[in-house]
Image (cartoon, rainbow, N blue to C red; front, top):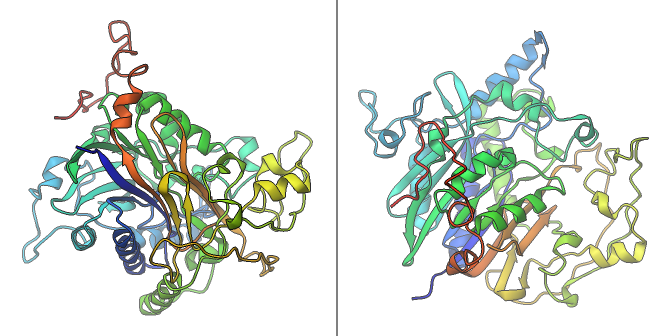
Length: 477
């Protein structure tokens, strides 16, 4: 029996309200279902939002009143999945936690809405959320089966710390790491438990490592030890170093790796981050609904790949040559120091490239572009079937007081079990762009273990041993 599935990642960005984002998630999932997708990954903190650029008025030894108001707004935007601060584990999954008198479920209904979308579409959903439990927020991932509902949920065990000096020169390319430890509590390592499911007769063992957890070798190994064949990496890291990390993880694990990031312009940040005047919830909902409608009826402005993935996109007739962007200046240490007009325009590796090389390496994709090996890039628009389209002309970017600059350029990707880039990375594609990998052969994971199984034949487990508190590292049944 063939062990083949269609996998996808959504490069969606959070909308101003949770209800609007859930509506957009539903639209994206229905679109994926029409294209035959079996499993769909959304980015880190998609529901609830990643508060990029926000400092919550915090400094060492000081907090401001405005910062506390920002945290209040963020707390209200987070979702309540009905879990406890310690984590209910299987009791939460099996709905054995106590329900308030007069209510049918715990939480705010987000869990039930996600289960409804999965059930309607038949798509297995993996969604990054910011959940509130008690008085704390957690960065989490929830696994939603179309038939059985939520199969599990895990919380990020290590919100990231302050970046080093080099990263501080590139503030939009990496997570707002200093504030993560301020606003997100640490999750339990027991939630690193892998999930098993069967889709179209194909058995999957899947688990997620969130953003910079992927830089933790022992955490990665805890997932490898559970024999995952689908490794999920929702992230907020849009740096050029992310793709090599994903390829390394695929090589180590001999698993398929899916990574989804948000692609966000400054104007898409919530009003409470941008400092706009406060509005009531009904006004937010109306605005968000309009944004959602636009996002799913208009063609995305741009979809770019850098030179690391030039073999994954379509033939030359799908390419066009943008104008050469300005060279980004560097500080005395050689670190790029882009101005707002330069941010997101050109990867650092291309700064010294000749104009001819830049034209060769930069590409523009059509609304639905076929890639080698029957993989596709699907962007919102009128196209509902796979077809060739004419390349579009590029236009010079317009200035709008920095509102159109990218605070995160995306970079979502799909990697094969030997480290080959199957799809992506997807740069500067907004409004729910999908990267789709078709006819993925899960038996390639076993084929790859002929020469490398880092948790088995290549582990020397007689000499090295890993223990994780509250977590069984044996492969699940």
